[in-house]
Image (tube, rainbow, N blue to C red; front, side, top):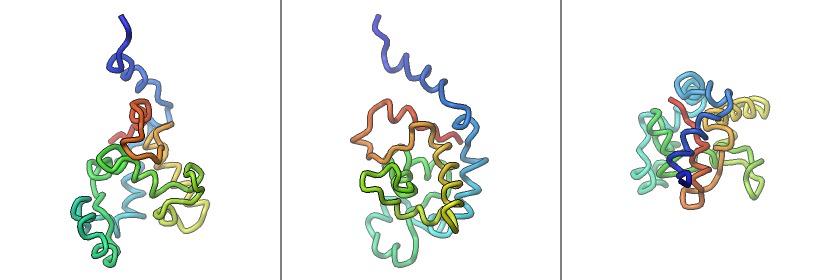
Length: 150
């Protein structure tokens, strides 16, 4: 019998490095998010569909899409806005054009702090899960590497 993805995926998920296993939303990402992102992506912000329908309006108010909970933030890692979290926070080392994402600058006051905080976010997403592609361009393998533990 040929192994199916359903048979292989659980085994792949069990091989995630310890760093990703130890990184959780509640313990690592949430405090960083509160310090660096909440002002623009908190409870005053609209959810994605509303934000996109009135993007210019919300941008003038310095509000981005709402990401004030684990489920809301995961939408920007996995689906429906796959990879947006990574594209926006990336330092440019993973981008084809070499440019950092537009939210990278908000990860810290200087490059050292930004790199430290980026490492936290990357550990949470998972080893190999930090991909800048949209959903249509990802493989099942790419999706399987995204860990985002609560």
